Image (tube, rainbow, N blue to C red; front, side, top):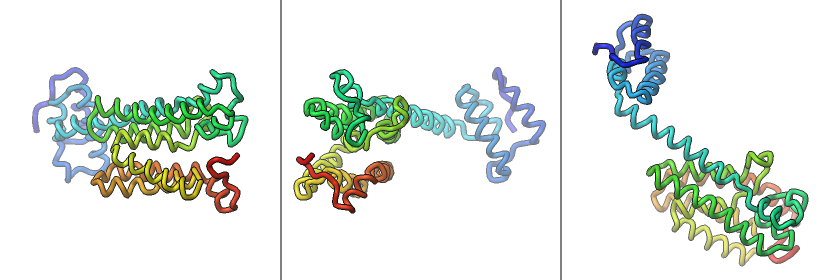
Length: 263
C-alpha cells in the first residue's frame, strides 16, 4: 500500500485504515466500504488530495472528471430553474396595470392568458420572453460548460416556468419555454416543432392540440438526429407538458375546448 499523504486534513485516512484494515481492490470491497471510498475520494478530489486518492486505491483522474460534471449539472439545473422561474406574463401585466393574470381566465401566467387581458402586444412580448429565457439559459451554460450540462439547464428552465418558486409553484404550461430550450439544443428540431405546431393549428384550430402534437414528436426527431440524450430529456419534458395540459385534454374530449380565434 502507498504511504499516507502528508496533506492537511488527510489524517482521516489513518483512522479509516485502523478501522477497515488494508484497502484491497474495488471488486473485493463490501458495498459499505465502496461507499465510504467514493465519498472520501469526492472530498479528496475537491481538496486536491491526489495522494490520498492513490492511498485508497481509487482512480483520482476518474474522480476528478466525474465530480465536476455532477457539480456542473446541478449548477446548470439551478441556473436554468431561476431563469425559467421569471414570470414575464405576470411582470408585464402588473407593469401595465392590467388585471392580475391569476384572477382571470385559466389563471395561467402564460401568453394565452395574457391575451385575455385584451393586450395583444403584452401577449406577444410574453411569448417571446418565455421562449428566450429557455434559450438564453441553455446557451449560457453551453458556453461555460460544454457537454450535457446544457440539457440540465433546459430541464431546469422548463421546470422553473412550470413551477416558479416566487408564486407558489403555480406557473405556465411551458410550450414557449420548451421551444426556446429546444432551439438552443438543436435548432433543426426546434424548426420541426414550429412546423408541426403551425400545421396542426392550421388544420384543427386548436392551440393545445398543436402543442401536444409538436412536443410528442420532438423526442422522435431528436432520436433521428442521433441525439439520444436530448431525446430522453425532452421526452421527460414532453410528458410534463402533457400533464400541464390535462385540463385542455379533458375539454377536448368533452368538445368544449376553445379554438384559435374564438373567445
